[in-house]
Image (tube, rainbow, N blue to C red):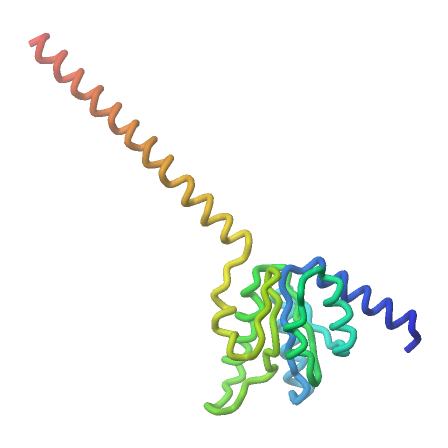
Length: 182
């Protein structure tokens, strides 16, 4: 591979890191071809992309993010594949969890592909023990939706109280006018 081809690959990977708010680094090196194909198919079906890169290319591309990503060096050992998601940061974790369940790994056996690290909205998570926590992370859109809901809730209560109060007042006036007429 020529220097220009390597630089083009780093630029491509850097562009993917810039355009995806979350990505996971996994190791699928000991998986059979059939299982890797099943994993790739599941990724494709859920709108995610899985691709294997050299650790040096990943490191160089991470340096272009503008954040301190030195913690990711712990994940850049051995074989590394990158799982990209345009959805929420928890979508790849849920995909990995579902894949593990489908493979029915016995107790004590570490499921494959192994989660080595994750980058979610400028936060870095290292190690496969982070998977359960990553499945509960809410994306930016989900958090904004909750915030808007919380902000709208008091306003809806005030409007509801004013409307119900108006109905009560109209009922009282109607009752009083009927009593005077009678």
